[in-house]
Length: 492
Image (cartoon, rainbow, N blue to C red; front, side, top):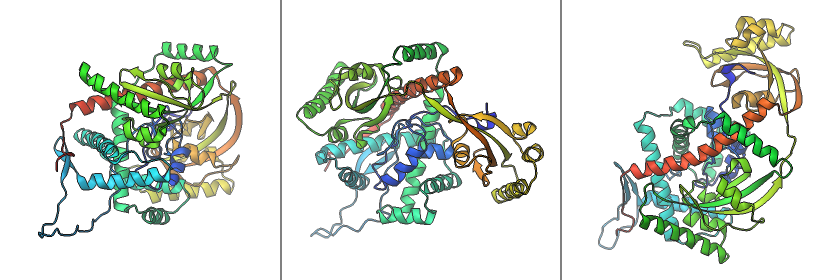
């Protein structure tokens, strides 16, 4: 097993909502390469535990969760004066605790989302319905940001800069080119930075409030493995889309009936031939509503039991009836299904590394330079193991930096990406992870069937991801119920 300094938390699925940005294809590449479902792009960049990961995250996400407010122009043109000389001012459309959302902010988001739905080929819902849906989303985002601020969660500029650099690197463009592409697409750089900051803050909030409290017992793992063994010959993966109509916690009978009728209205529209993505954008309270409700490909063990039971009676293209869960009412559409490999194999890598930790008084440039000199000595003939024993700050230094055999997910994303780019016996350039600066050498690779320990780890991660998804929706509902929200959208 790799040393603890390289251990990575189990991958979760984390749906990221990026339809608020029209640069979705570029960001989708970054998010999807970082491990979805679950590991979100931002999470991967910061070594946060993703949830939403899993499945294709974008179309983008997920992982769960929600982005912050979309980029807005830095300056709006002054509206023309009315005949009486009065210039109309922005107005408040919602009060959320001690902050407000304005009509201008809502209009900016309407414009951005409408633009992206059109790019996806999705018919736009009625304007008033989309406006109310987006306002709800903005309220939920703001409540989460407020919750994070109150509990001291912050993302400094240095962390934000590293996240942005990672996004650019994963898309093989320079930061200058990345910024140019954003601005070419109508996205203001300063607003984009703050939007990404909001994503990371909400990711950290979810990690602390939800993901960190999700536990999986050995009995649950045993049950999961037994179920997989019984279904080994017919195991399937499903590509799904869903609609969720949330029911408030401790809702009255009347409130439940109102939400049930809303779900029935959505189902009625679908039965009449309406596009699922359009109805999702109009009715769904799920974080992925604006991505057509897409959950991507998921094995049965990654789905709630009520979903599995429903889709077993569906053929691709069909939609379920209304499903009831503690969180609300669901509608599920089976888009496609496929068989899983009954005997999965994984590629393992045997490697060794030298780590120089970020210490007081040691700059990044100094750490990088030290490793560069060590790399040159090794290439010139010095023994890697001996140099690791003398210079590495990792516990593996006593073994010459040897990490043993590593499977996907055993190390943090930065380390795994650097290692995967190397040929056998090649030594990497210095690179940074949350633990410091490294050079790594790949010694050999092999393909192995899943060991019993690995099977249990995979099952445990799948259970944790499923439970985290369900817990997040429940936590978000409770957080929303505690907040003070006053609507003023209908006021004129």
